[in-house]
Image (cartoon, rainbow, N blue to C red; front, side, top):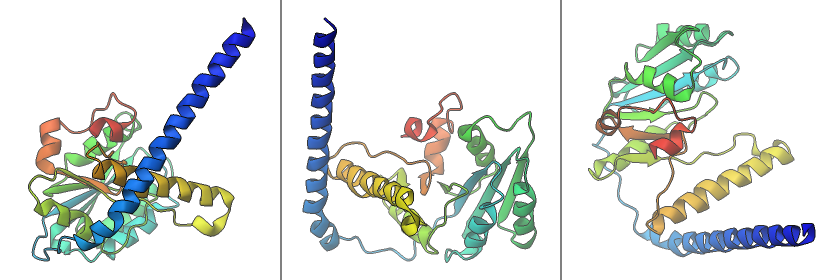
Length: 241
């Protein structure tokens, strides 16, 4: 009896693995097939379309990286009069809030929201909702505190919203220290598979690409219609998708 159960379990697992393998091959072939087509059909960027944008950066005990991303925010090529950075210090116990305040004092477009222990530490969705209350931009973007963006990342993300049918946009996440060791290389490989193959193939096949939680954004009107992020859901990115 036990042998039969083990054999059945093995067959089920093998079938699932083969099915996933076939799926991934189909996705890979789809991306390769459409790679040249995407190059040929690139929509010209509309340099005059620059909506106001608010970047939400939730941060809990991120003193090691918060200064790096905020310094990068000051180096963005997007017009500063159309840019707002909202840092949500989610009841941090380290120097995160103080570092963020230093940037806020020198940059008028950087705003810091401090949450105490009573209102903070309730998850990323809760922190984002707190920041959203202070966001003023037409486009609401989400960056994790450990993200290090390209200087022109906002131009690349916001230009898609020139199409009124676009409600959300997702950028590609890459690993900054990929060559460091085998772990970072594997993580980089996983990110490439997830963003360059899985997400792109879903889009090409008319399936549902998933918002990854960072390096992406939404129309303000869409978030308001949805009532922001659902704080009862752990995976806020999947829920919002």
